[in-house]
Every structure is written in structure tokens, then in C-alpha cells.
Length: 59
Image (cartoon, rainbow, N blue to C red):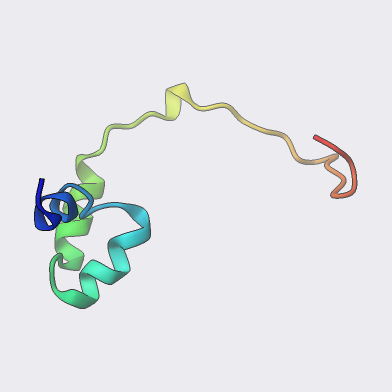
């Protein structure tokens, strides 16, 4: 796999989005389309109640 192929596979990697936009590899419209293509996984999520969370306590 070449470097360009590896970068193409990672073009929507969260840590690289800003970099790729600055480099012109993706546009804000590309990113928006990608986000819209993702499935809704909210039914598989878990709610965490932090109401009584104390930063000094162990989790």
C-alpha cells in the first residue's frame, strides 16, 4: 500500500479532517456528505448520568 492509498483510506479520520481541508484534499461539502452517510447508532448508545460525579472519586 502506498502512502497516498493509506491517506485516502484515512481521509475522514477525525484527527486529520482539518489537515485535509487545509490541504484541499476534502471540502466542507465532502465532509458533510460523509457525515450524512453514517448510520444512526443512537439505539446502541448508553446514557451516562454524571449528576453525582465527583472529580476526585474513582470511577
